[in-house]
Image 1: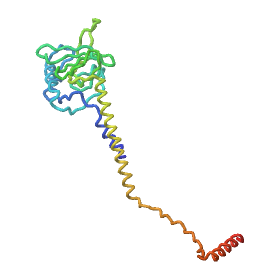
Image 2 (image 1 turned 120 degrees about the vertical axis):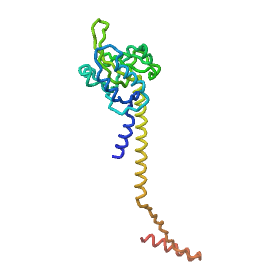
Image 3 (image 1 turned 180 degrees about the horizontal axis):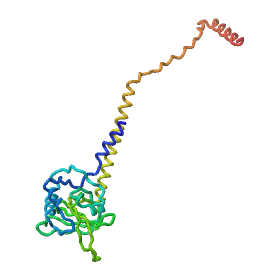
Image 4 (image 1 turned 90 degrees about the horizontal axis):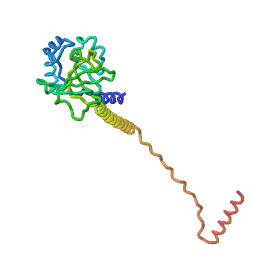
Length: 247
């Protein structure tokens, strides 16, 4: 039982954290975000609010629910109900480009989700680590902004989701870091288990009474005394021999 609790606690420490902690939305930010209109051009008032919001991505620790599974259909059908929600977005980086002034410190990323839907993510350039190339899978913690409409390469108008996030990470690198933390936690758990077993065995050994086997001495063979006189000794030996033959 104790080992199970210890392992549960250790494994809880290995749970993957957010890529970059985003501060909670202020009441004024949520109010402006709620007035956002979908299928309109950017930037708008909500765009400016969220741009300032993600610029503070490393100032405060996040203290709210993080949706680990992005359901694009739900956001497309009811964007008003999901405005500002924090999601963990994972997809293949299809394109990235810098924004124009006054948002030149932001980048616009286009991702292709595993289900095929394209999404846009706006994030501060300062939070982007080096080595992330187009075509690689990445993961980003991002807030839902709105549904946008754009003309696709086939000439059709397409709807896609837009987010604001920070601190993207390559998927393989993040998973490798998680597995490494898991290995460390499991090793620590085994060490704790061995320590508990050792202490239990040591305590039981101290409670057991010490038993020592008593070794009985070998019986001493009783040898008859032979007379010192040679003639008497000879007669004694003959008598012993006769007694042995009779027995």
